[in-house]
Length: 244
Image 1 (cartoon, rainbow, N blue to C red):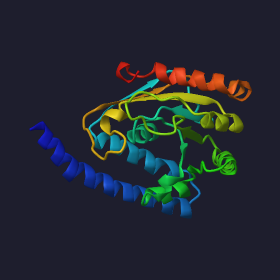
Image 2: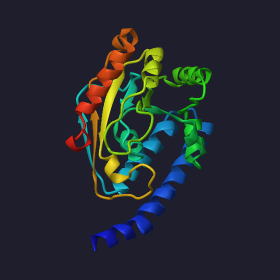
Image 3: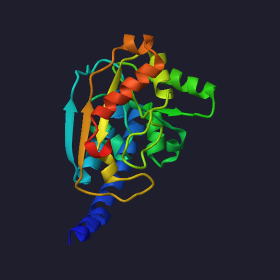
């Protein structure tokens, strides 16, 4: 009986509301950014859209703050990548104005891809070093007035729920931008939607753990491998046991 209820809920409530909300949010972002210079349109509609996605999935949300984050300071947020719901959880509940550093392929998503471009999110072309440098330069221009950038250093979503090794690219970018790094641990998105599936598992718990910032001086002057390993250990420390 429970499975039938969830199926009907997904088909007749979750999917229609989410699709309509996505179109409305993307339209608000595109029109708002084109006709107004206020940052409200870049950040607020997507934040509420993300919260709606979590609540539509009947998720129980928990946010754990282990460090103090300044809303007027720009950061590089480094997070593990469990699934599509990482984006909704971070976007909706981090409480910061963030830009996403994301793959070029996401530009093709209807409405969302174009809205993300207009809002100033950074698409990364990993095909050449020149393209990566251009992405870093664009990020520097976008990170003003307390805006931050969020990067998934694993490079892709996990297939198993376990955290994969980090790639150096995210930390090269952080050093080049000269900003503090804030490690983030996400728990639960893997249980809601696994990679390469559109099936939603309702009623799962989501947890966002915001760790202590690593000062900009340590990021800029520290050894790249040491910085990468430190962030990996911090993010891993916040994982639920079943993901370790």
